[in-house]
Amino acid sequence: SAHRIDVVSIFPSYFDGLTLSLLGKARESGILDLRIHDLRDWTSDRHRTVDDTPYGGGAGMVMKPEPWALALDDLAAGSDRPTIIFPSPAGEVFHQKTAREFSEREHLIIGCGRYEGIDERVFEYAATLGEVRLVSLGDYVLNGGEVAAMAMIEAVGRLIPGVVGNPDSLVEESHEDGLLEYPSYTKPSSWRDRAVPDILLSGNHAAIAAWRHEQQLARTESRRPDLLSD
Ligand code: 6GU
Image (tube, rainbow, N blue to C red; front, side):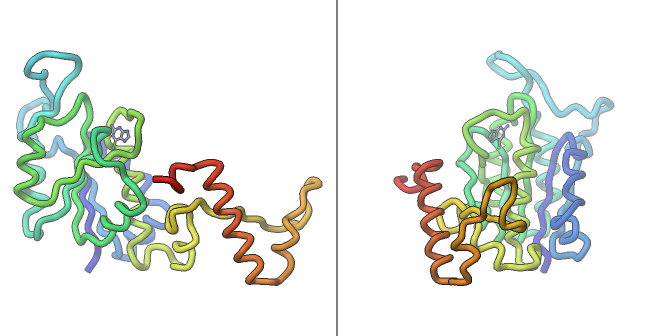
């Protein structure tokens, strides 16, 4: 059974890049059933309106609830409580753990908001159809959920069995063991007066593994001390 991901956006062409590379191949082979939808397909007025002014006043526009409800009804139909993700800077922070959890779900629906946000009642309604998760990439603001959704789809998609050809390449990556990755080198062994560390040419696999672990710890302490303390 293919993993299904439905994305709803008013800018579906953002997601054209997901036809490329590993995820593109996974879609062609049927491992990943990724479907991109235009929210305006669930409007019925001449102007295909998706937003309106906020009650209570304030800057910007708010996304109207009805197109979202119709889209979610259609996409959740016949599915046993899908996971419904709304990218939002006000959500829980997305981590490798979150990516792994989502990669184990059979059906994800990702609703990309624009403007100042989506009418709050949409989140309550979505919770009647599936498990709702508001998810943020981190503490900075993007113009909409699309770029965040793409990052999440790539992080989740590559964890689906068969998407990454060699599963060994998944285990030694940054964040899989809570540490940053060790440094990598390739030929030539000396380049512009810079040598590859001798240990990597020694053929001593135990010593190399120990050196790489030390490098992981040193880099994590220097660049991401929060990963060691939190
Ligand atoms: Cl998920 N959405 C938006 N609009 N901004 C963000 C974000 C998400 N994550 C970080 N910044």
